[in-house]
Image 1 (cartoon, rainbow, N blue to C red):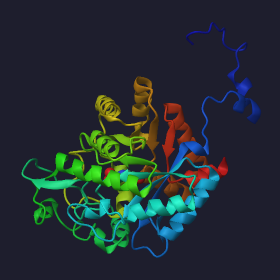
Image 2 (image 1 turned 45 degrees about the vertical axis):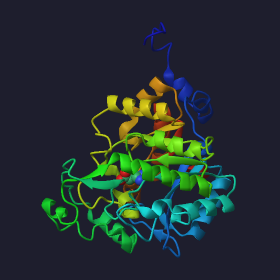
Image 3 (image 1 turned 135 degrees about the horizontal axis):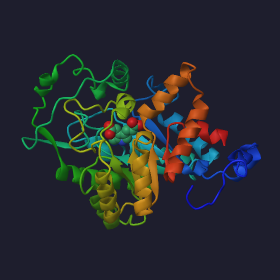
Image 4 (image 1 turned 180 degrees about the vertical axis):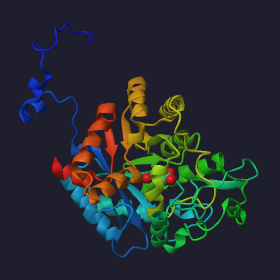
Length: 375
Ligand code: PBG
């Protein structure tokens, strides 16, 4: 004990304040409300009805119609915001559908705004769901060698195959040895930072025009917040906030997501732009730069394997901070709960508490609806 002079037991008995639910509530140090939860949703251009995602039990690829219903429910429950990801029918090298005025996410924003006008809409700003190679930006060649990726898991591949014919994900990859990725995309292909920035700015602007309340750049390109901020300001959206995926790690925990949207890279991996999981000083640099460039909220992602990063960012920057409980973290709890190995509801609540305890203001979780219902 530091500050308190205590003789310890029997004068001090910490169990006294744990004796009843009322006493425990009285001295509880952190709490959360539905308003601090953000619900990520997938919307698929070609979907006529919601399609279940087997690696993410309870999560679907929405049609516009089912998305509207989900948004109404989220609004009614007082959930803080919905975070939208689009799955287009057509993918190409430049992700040209990503900034289409009538693209899947732009339509989804309009749909949610009509169905649930009081629900804040955030959009993911990235190219990986829209490129046929699955990388988050525009490829160029010859600048940097990318190393081969280990093959995705069978479930991820099955989901990717279901997520739409245009995904292409997994159809070529799993049977190849590392060098075989090179036929269409030579191993020297490289995601070009500065040409990608232009695309990201255009994508963010198209989301703003569609009516998004906030944009969330997640491509991990240097300068992405600055260029998006500038683009928004120049077009009259100076009041539209940016939620920056600031410390986004190159993580195995994105596996189910990539299967769900068909965005697994067709060659190489994302380690040349996403962060190395071993680093924390670098996360501070990322956050410092994003705040300087105009980020209104910063994010750590994945969440629960990185709570130390959350804590140090909160202490250093005192800036609004979000944590993303990503697909793999969600799937782990769901899979264990399905086997009866743990109580899923309790585990999810405990995880949100851990995020809040670590210093996160907001929690992005696929479990938001069910959590909000239990509050
Ligand atoms: C990129 C993006 C990803 C996720 C959110 N935005 C995938 C990636 O970087 O591969 C992952 C979310 C999750 O796993 O739940 N647009």
